[in-house]
Amino acid sequence: MIRTLLAGAVLLAALAGGRAFAAPAPQRHGSFPSPSPDGKLIAFASSRAAAIDPKQSAWMHMHIYLMSADGTGVHQLTHSDTSDTAPVWTADGTWIVFGALRPGSDRTSLEAIKPDGTGRHTVMTGEFLPWVRLSPDGRRIIYTAVTHASPAGIFTVGLDGSDRRELPTRLDRPWDGILSPDGKRLVFGRWPPGPDPEHQTSEIYIADADGAHRRLLATYPGVVQVASWSFDGRTIAYQTWTGGKGEADIVALDVASGQFHRVSRRDGVYLDETPSWTPDGRLLFQSTRSGSFEVYVMDPDGTHVRLLTP
Image 1 (cartoon, helix red, strand yellow):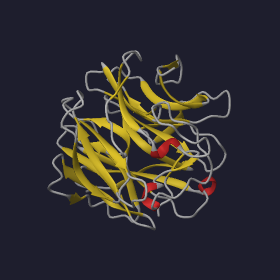
Image 2 (cartoon, helix red, strand yellow):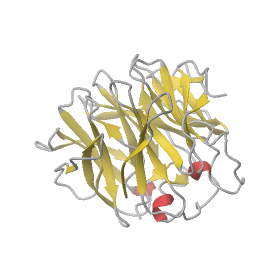
Image 3 (tube, one colour):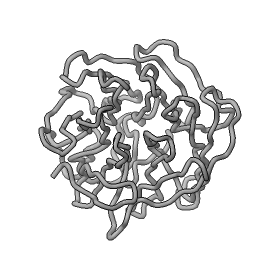
Image 4 (tube, one colour):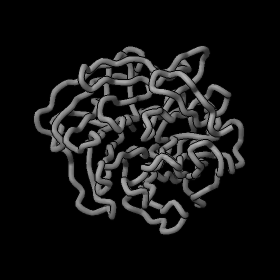
């Protein structure tokens, strides 16, 4: 399977038939934060309600939660026998789309639910990364298909699971695609070859929304993933992964110049991951700064960091 990692723990264990993680991962009190279009609510994934053996990973025991933007009013949204993770909102705030993993299965399901907890249904099933992105108009889902060896392509599908299309990136191992806020440009990565992320280089490409006029936008020493495009269209935030070093950072790519800079201001060994821009230009992210994964918010320069899920 593709060894796409959420810095510090094997991602997509479910796609490998529910295999155990290589090592215990931090518990996930709050992960994959995603703001509502109006910025008033935050959807996130958490294993806080699960009874988990300390030697097991919380990755297979997640549910979707909602809270207010200030961290109050936390309540559980999904209740199922699947591990629900990586929520994203449709543009009108009507639906929350998320990945669902079932232990022992090699397939991911893509689910949708209304913010009031009703209307949950399966959009599609298959082998793909559980984090997806939505088109700016909210009508289509962008996802990366995977095989047992590597990424198999970037696809879009309607919110009802119909009209599946492959985006013509004209590259091998394309993945982690995201559309610009105006819907005119597509940015995607090329999964680096080789098993050692400390000696890999990520390639980031930009093209028209239909894949035409592709060009290399930037490179990064290591793996960057889980892209989030700022509302003003100027910056794309990523999380880094460098293998077993025990660190991950939020970095930002300036679209105009193709230059990366680090946002995380590190003062210890921990993981800053899964960035998501808020409508007012701040960054939500998950971090192990306090031990377990929690949801934080910070300014785009890495200052004024505040814990939202204590």
